[in-house]
Image (cartoon, rainbow over all chains, first blue to last red; front, side, top):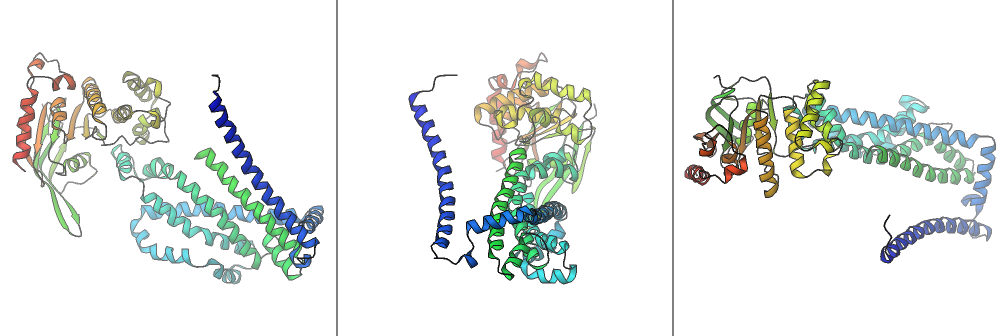
Length: 262
Length: 252
């Protein structure tokens, strides 16, 4: 390899330092928040019975980890989120393909899609319990209903923006509708599909938590409601912190998929 | 000899809520096998519509189009290579769509890629190719289906001037070597004269055939065709240019 010039070396050092500063800054904020929280409780500025504290949360986590219950709750929420996320992805892709194929249906249904998309889906949750029962079905349907309509609209818009001439190309080479879909529409919509997935994974988590608030006896949403009802705020705060970490983790997961296919 | 393509009084209109726009009216001409025909006309006169009709992407409203060819190849203005496919996989797209990708057809495509200077780029992606190379891949994609009749819709118009001269030279030569019948649509008069055996001049919208001008070069009398670039330097070239220019301006 060529010898690196002094100026280039200086530039590289600068970039390395910049990256390190970002990392240090991020950790400092986290540590400062935890110390401030714990300190405020210790000095009596906050009441740890209602505000909990990092140490109390750690103890609660330790206790629940010992009997395995916390992992069960995390597993249930994660599982429900992934199931509803997969269903949203498949359903919205299928619906978008069908609506793209059938222009009449798309135009007829458009106002309904827009309405369903902007309807606050949490309003549906109580109805869903009555219809579907106090079980996982309600939770999954609640999660799907939050993400699916927006996802269909985004994908359909994306399909419509695909270059008309590319479709003409496929037709001139003797391809049919199916070929247009598999050779052009879907491959050229991969970046869009992935950005929709990034939004959907977050929305599904929101839907699952709403569902668990109302119709569950396990999961982090259930733990939050249970904790607040019996005034064990340690459980509530712990669940929220785990949700923060979990949503970051799910987002990273989609990033990995993006690196692989994007 | 029986013509490979014959148009009889073809007419076509575009329809919108604001009314009907007559694009083609009473267009008749025929093309013999092995002939290179160029169509010129003012922009927006319906040249591309004509090709879409011949190719069957649009349905004829008036008149009829008789085609005596099992397969027609259509080359569009831009190359439309699919960025997520390698050069080779782009070139075999048509074969794939027609379920005709046999080992020998694949080998034929590889052979053409090699012959036309793309041998080392078979596994490369379109983004790493120059404009001229991309257009050659697009031509090979069309030729892979072994069309008897090639339709070229301003295939050089998206290229810069220098590349354009090179590519039209390349592609003209390739089409001659592969002995294809071709119908080229262009608004570039010198391109039409440098490539065509005949130039058909269309009038303003609604387009109809105004003149059909056979192109002859003295140096080609022996049967050997000049390359498009040397045609541009031939003595007769400016004469043809002026003649077509007058025809087009005259109907303005």
